[in-house]
Length: 199
Length: 199
Image (cartoon, rainbow over all chains, first blue to last red; front, side, top):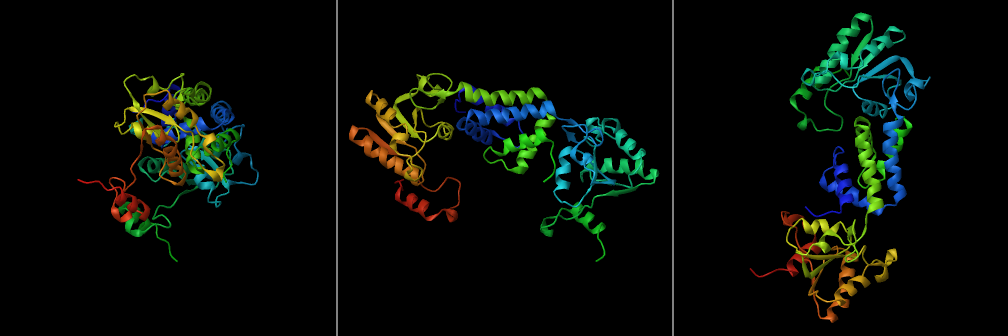
């Protein structure tokens, strides 16, 4: 490896710890920082610490928030009868971007995973039951990931919630829009067939 | 766009200013920072400022350095008779990684570009002439980019240096190793033919 000056090497190592950033990208970012003004570097440095210091969790839905309630829970225009359950705060982004959901969210902060010793107690399930208990919720949409852990979590929650007389739904699984059928794997194809809808 | 809590939105905006980082990557990085410890975030923040505060330019070759001389200029094992001229400090990385060059470097900090009003005075050419003037340099390798500005810079330097009785060389241009000839553009192919070597 080339000999970088120590501060440069250090920032490269720190960039490499970020997801999706390898040696080459880290070098590119580091050399970019070298070229920018100190103010720009300071703004990024501050923003990093600010995230750690000034963000907490929404008291209602466990989303990331800089206030007691997150923007969705604060927004009185949102439909309080629908609660969409997701694994992580960033999953909300993918749903919001569709502009098709106007209800509230509930963030579990994980999914059931016996292998990683994550049981129901490690997830924010108790607070979900409390929210439902306080009334007004008519439908719970389970939007956990379409993988083993996400599926297990959805099944667990549906067994827990259905006896409460709620409508419990699961997001559809099938072939992604814009893809070529040729490349669909067999499980996805099976789900796509199973979930077919009449036209 | 989804409503992010303000500190999160701010760090996303700061990440987006880095090269090659779009909205999605910036979100991913921001959510990663959210999940890591405060110490990790602080280490990155510190490293960023450290780069701006503790790095200067090598007095000899203009490479990035945290001391008066950069690691290459300090290294007494390197061949002082060869000087490889590059446009930017990060170009040194690409050359060092080959482990085939053991001489010194000279960083111009740019290339001639009349359109961007960059003339010879804006580049570190005077200090290159001083280095050569102080003796010991036998060959100058022009490793500027194979584009219009890099070529112009190489031609300009070669005219300047040849009268000094130096060997002035230019890195080879041709088809990249491992590529398919089918995809070589005509100028590259022309350079590859022009630069052909007897076997």
